[in-house]
Amino acid sequence: MSAGTLPQSPADGRGPASAPSLAKQPSSRAGSGSGPGPGSGTRADDGRIGLRANLRHIGALARRNMLQIKQDPESMFDAVFMPIVFVLLFVYVFGGAIAGKGNNDAYVNYVVPGLMAMMGMNIAMGVGTGINDDFKKGVMDRFRTMPIARSSVLIAKIVVEIGRMLIATAILLGMGFLLGLQIHTSVLGLFGAIGLSMVFGASLMWIFILLGLTMQTAQAVQGMAMIVLMPLQFGSSIFAPPTTMPGWLQAFTDYNPLSALADSSRALINGGPLAHSVWMTLGWSVAITAVMAPLAVAKFRKKT
Image (cartoon, rainbow, N blue to C red; front, top):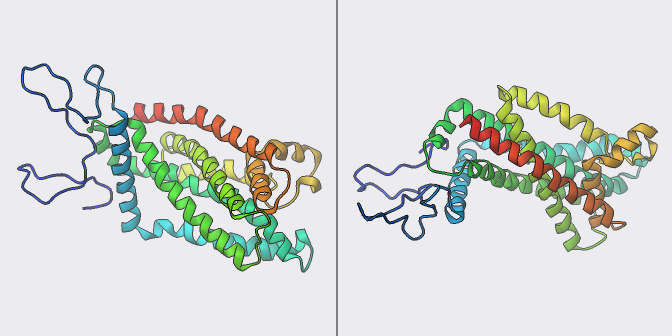
């Protein structure tokens, strides 16, 4: 079975057991007029997909996406190697210039929490290119014929990408600890920073899903994503305190959601004022999801 297709049962039903199907067909007696059987997960009156069936579909589609990664391990290179490159690059190239010569240890505690925000944004970009690639390969044609909720396809993508984000964040923190990162608050504070990064990263995925559904090619998705990424990443407090920036750039940095996430992660790991930056991060996450998720689902339904 290839990663890009879903398992099928033989027509006579005597073949090997297959993975759980994406949707259970409602069972009713001929001419009885009865609705779907118990646990079918569908509603007979309007054809909507029930919650249990929707969750089952998300699980099967997430498994399909993980099988894709298993058959193409190179797709994990960005999650595995990018954190290592970023930590080494910014600590040893910019650390001395920003924190002063010999103060790399202090800069590690500044930049690594900021890189957690940057990592989530870069991993989120992969969702858009993946969706675009699925349409090019015809995988979505298969989904179009199935009685599944359209949102389950997109949510399954996000679930798997959050897993990739967790792996990337774990490697990032591992490199940080090797270079001298210290937790000045508690382990709970560290987990809080990781959780906040996951929430914000998941909200950003809806933006890139919409780009993947709108652009014609995966290259176009990557190009447009970089136009969005670059100003947000470097016009933020991820790499350096904004106090040295011009006034107009400081104003942009103050409202940049990546700055809010970077400041929240630093406060949760190093200590310091916390409430404002956390609420800003959560507010941005809710606002982005509330606007982009319906647009992405509507665009997906239109294309399928």
